[in-house]
Image (cartoon, rainbow, N blue to C red; front, side, top):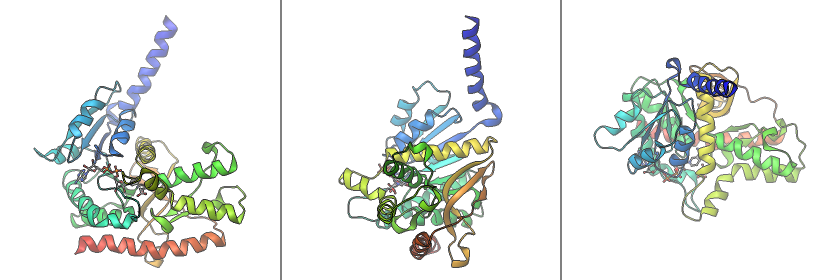
Amino acid sequence: MFAATRVLSSVAAKRTFATSAANLSKVAVLGAAGGIGQPLSLLLKNNTRVTDLSLYDIVNSPGVAADLSHINTNSKVAGFGPENDGLKKALEGSEIVVIPAGVPRKPGMTRDDLFNTNAGIVRDLAEACAKHCPKANFLIISNPVNSTVPIFAEVLKKHGVYDPKRLFGVTTLDVVRASRFVSEVKGKDPKDVNVTVIGGHSGVTIVPLLSQTGEKFSQEELDALTNRIQFGGDEVVKAKNGTGSATLSMAFAGARFADSLLQAKQGKKGIVEPTFVESPIYADQGIEFFATNVELGPEGVEKILPVGETSEYEKDLITKCIADLKKNIEKGKSFVKA
Ligand SMILES: NC(=O)c1ccc[n+]([C@@H]2O[C@H](COP(=O)([O-])OP(=O)(O)OC[C@H]3O[C@@H](n4cnc5c(N)ncnc54)[C@H](O)[C@@H]3O)[C@@H](O)[C@H]2O)c1
Ligand SMILES: O=C(O)C[C@H](O)C(=O)O
C-alpha cells in the first residue's frame, strides 16, 4: 500500500513539474477543427507540458473543444470562433501558436496553387497575432510554407514585433517521412534512422541529405528515395483522392515540434529539430529563409546548425532548391508589401 502511494505521488510530482507556475504553457491552435487541427489538438491535450489549450477556427471549434475537454489530463481546453472577439481571446497569453488554418491540396495541384486562398488567411491571422500575442512562438503549417512564413514575417515586421527567433515553418513531416522511407529500404527501426532534410517544404525545395545518414545507397536507391521524400505529400494527396492531404502524420509531426519547443523553453538543452526559419546559411545567394537542423532554446531559435558535408548529388539538389525557394519567398514578401 505504502509503495503504491509512493509510486502514485511520484507520478503526480512529475505531472506538477510540467504544470508548475514557472512552466505555464498556453498553446493556441488556429484552424483547430480541420483535418490536421483536430488530431493535433488531441496530441497537445495529451501533452502534460501544455496547461491551456486554446482552439480557434471559423467553424466548429466549440464542439472540438468540448470533446477534448473530457480527456483527463490536466490542461484546460477552450474553443473560440470569430464572434465575440474569439480570436483575440484565443491568442491572448499564448506562448505557442500553431497554425494549420487554410485549404489543402487536391490531386494535380502544387502547394503553390494554394497561395491565392491561404496567403490571405495567414496574413490575417498574423495581423491578429501581432496585436494579441506578439511575444508568442509561431509555428506555421499552412501551405505553401515557403511563402506563408515570409508572409507572417512581413506582417510582424509591419507591426514592429518581428523576432526571427520565434517564427518557424514546420518541416518536421519531411524528416518523419524520410526516416520512415529509409528505414523501410534498409530494414531498420525508424527510431535508429535520422535523416537531415534541408531547404523548404515543396517538391525540389525539399533536400534530403542521405549521405549524412551513415547508410550506403546505390544510385537507384538514392534517386528513388530522394524522389519519394520530395514528393511524399503527393502520395497522400493522390490516395485521399480529392478529400485532402496529409493530416494524421502532419498532426504527429506538428505535435513533435511543439513538444520539442516546449521542452527547450522549459530549460532542456540540446533539443534539435529541422525547421524553416530566417537563416544566414544561403543569405549570400539571396535566400532569407531556409530549413536546417536548429537547436531550440528558451527564446526559440538558439542556434542554426550548419548544413555540413554534402555529396555532389546533394549539391546539385541544393542548387535546384535555391532557384525555386527564392521565387516562393519573394512571392510571399511581395504579397504583404503590395
Ligand atoms: N507543413 C506541412 O508539412 C503540412 C502538412 C500537411 C498539410 N499542410 C497544410 O495545412 C493546411 C491545413 O490542412 P488540413 O488538411 O487541416 O485542411 P482542412 O481543410 O481539413 O482544415 C483547415 C481548417 O482551417 C480552417 N480555417 C480556414 N480559414 C481559417 C481562418 N481564417 N482562421 C481559422 N481557421 C480557418 C477551416 O475552417 C478548417 O477547419 C493546408 O494548407 C495544408 O496544405 C501542411
Ligand atoms: O502535400 C501537401 O500538400 C501537404 C503537406 O505539405 C505534405 O507534405 O503532406
